[in-house]
Image (tube, rainbow, N blue to C red; front, side):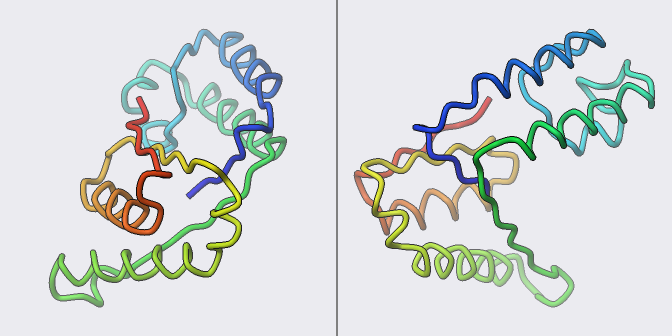
Length: 143
C-alpha cells in the first residue's frame, strides 16, 4: 500500500517522470514493474537499456515523493486453501488500519485506488476499508 495525502502536490515530480519517459518515447499511463521486468506490454518494444533507465528514473521519482508505504506478504505454501490466504491478508490489512486508525481518521475522506489486478486483494480492500470507514471511504479503479 502506498499512502499519499492529496494535499501534497506532486505535479512537478510527475512532470519530471513524464519528461524522462518521453525522452525515450515511452508514453505509458503508469509503470507496473512486473511487465517492465518481463518485457511485456506496454514495454515489449523497449531495449534492456531503456527498461533499466525506466527503473532508475522511476526509483528517483518515488524517492522524491511525499509518500509512505507498507508491504504485506503471505507464504502461499504455508496455507492449504485460498480461503486461508485471503484470511491472512485480511487480518494483516485490518490490523494495520486499526493500528493507524487515528491517522486515517484525521482525513475527511479516504480514497482507495486499486487496479483490480488480483480479485482477492480488491475484495479485501473494499471490504476492510468499507467496514471501518463506511461512507468516508471511496474505492476507485486505477487505470
